[in-house]
Image 1 (tube, helix red, strand yellow):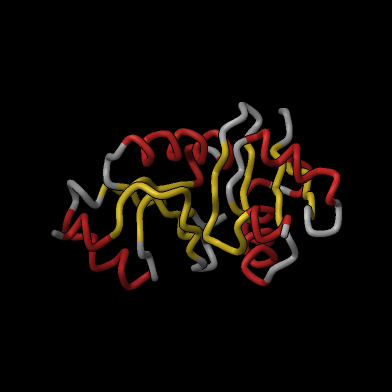
Image 2: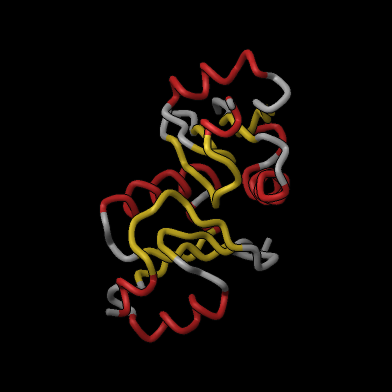
Length: 77
Length: 77
């Protein structure tokens, strides 16, 4: 199965959601990307349709925005 | 594994998220509840901490609000 990608920015809401997502779909099925640290991937997240983090991009390209940690504008700013 | 519960209200955002969640964690691992139809379970959703649907309650009781379809107030109203 293609992996999902979980984008976050290290915020408490993000960390909590990350643990939940890993518990639900399995560590091997999700790539975790911290766009607060790995800023080169912010553009990739935007292109995927992400508006806020934490968010999960499914293998078929759908974006699931989960709870609310930070807007992408805040991460970029 | 204890099952998660996915609460929705039949809205297009909900249906799309439902398909994604089922694809990610498996149909057998999630109970799907339409609180728009099964209104007796709205109180249960509120008690779980749900503020909007679609939302997923994990086996350990955490609430993941996913995207945004409708506030619980709208579903109740």
